[in-house]
Amino acid sequence: MTSQTQRIHYTLRIAAAMCFIGHGAFGIITKAIWCNYFALIGIGKATAYQLMPVLGSVDILLGIILLIRPIRAIAVWLIFWGIMTALCRPLSGEPFAEFIERAGNFGAPLCLLLLAGGFQFNFTWLFSSINPSDPVSEKSMLRVNRTLRVLVFLLLVGHGWLNLIQKPGLISQYSALGFSNPVNIAILSGIFEIMAAFAVLVRPARPLILIFLIWKMGSELFYPHFEILEWVERGGSYGTLLALWFCLEPIRIKIPGMEGGRLMVDG
Image 1 (cartoon, rainbow, N blue to C red):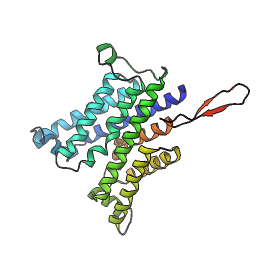
Image 2: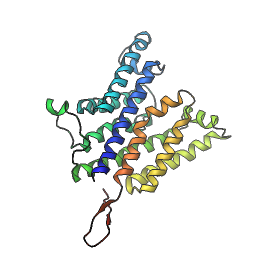
Image 3: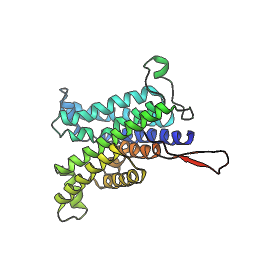
Image 4: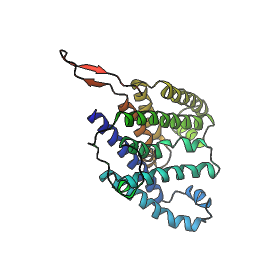
């Protein structure tokens, strides 16, 4: 199981770093819509534009540190910050789907900590680093499996919901791809994603998870502006899907008198 848990660890670790490095890059280039989020706490546009590069630099720095050394305190902060930044969207008037569609942002660092045994919240624990070679209990694996299923359900439902309500940005994507009726494409995509979400929640299957991963990674490539940054920022979405795919991997065991065996563990 060690190699399996290490693959999950590195997937979640890279995914969380991608999310916050991509998010930080938008702070550096001062994404205009962020002014709406600063306004929630009474910060005007002029000050917001001054603060964006500072916060963006912190996001990038923490993402890089997580890549180099996964300190638990950084993962805890990324969970909190991921939830808060995602909540700013519905609080500023955007659809609630914008929040749940970003479940991977805070879900990747959350599952990284769950895989390492969960939470303790004392000084020693907070400032210790996670060793990817440490043994992982069956209880932790089961907890990660279930959490990943919920996270993937949320992010697929959220994106599907945005398609069904015909988010302008998504309609622009489909138009840019040459679809003559982008509204119909959005509706069909929304139905597909919501059905996929329930399939993952009820009975995830590895081939389906792989299809959803390819779909998600491909569909996020077509933002009309800042395509690469948008794709990188959504690393939490790909990471939670890929980590779930690894979680569902059959575990091979040796049986006396046989070449080998296969044991399927289903959370």
